[in-house]
Image (cartoon, rainbow, N blue to C red; front, side):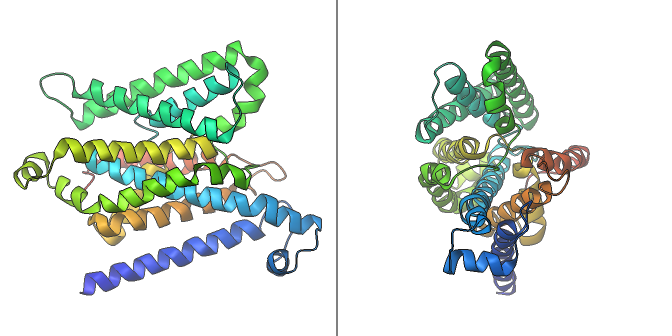
Length: 332
């Protein structure tokens, strides 16, 4: 009972922190606005520049950053459990790179720009990358191991990243259009972009929570889970599909943002424990808080210019990645 109360308090704290970060994202930035102006922009809209910035720029940006951060963190938590790899995340295992290549190819070769179309393209790229990584890592007598999975993911990520760079060299006219997006950014995104992919992200969140009990069993090890009657193929396949939904949707709306899926689940585990019924929703809340805070910070680093939020997460995430790799502790 004590643990339940503690975890409920953590979830409540995460919700409050996420709400606060959304408000901070709406109020602070290059255009100097106040909390009073932000309030009036929604209850007494007058069409002024400040009110337009708050409603049409900062609100969509805050909602997109929150949704992307939550999705990436939940995807990372699922992947670390399924693969038994503490370094597993959509970015590390090539899923983001596959989605990015497909989106860049759609823009540069086929001239596609519709958000709905690009969303499906991103899902296709994420799915292909996931299938390639799992097939390559499962080959051989030893089957899938954390080391083989990491190496396969690195190879697939490098391959798709090279393809992306090659496309941009051949189609230099599209470089400016996609370069900022490739760095991972929520700047300049409209609310319509989030609306187009939100059904897929929401479906991913729901399925993530529905898989929580199964993931608790899977975390005990494949042999134990099989002995308890768990259908390993079905659970792992559903988990990969959920990760593709979350990662593909995030890439479609914000580009490839790295390291959120690695860092946040480990931090969440250290605070709330390994029970996925608590871990997954708390990881989502913590991911939203992290990405929102990183985005607000990115506005002030080189003001009046902005640092893409993907760069901010990399600056924070690389030392954390090295720390986890050196520690070598398990994902559970």
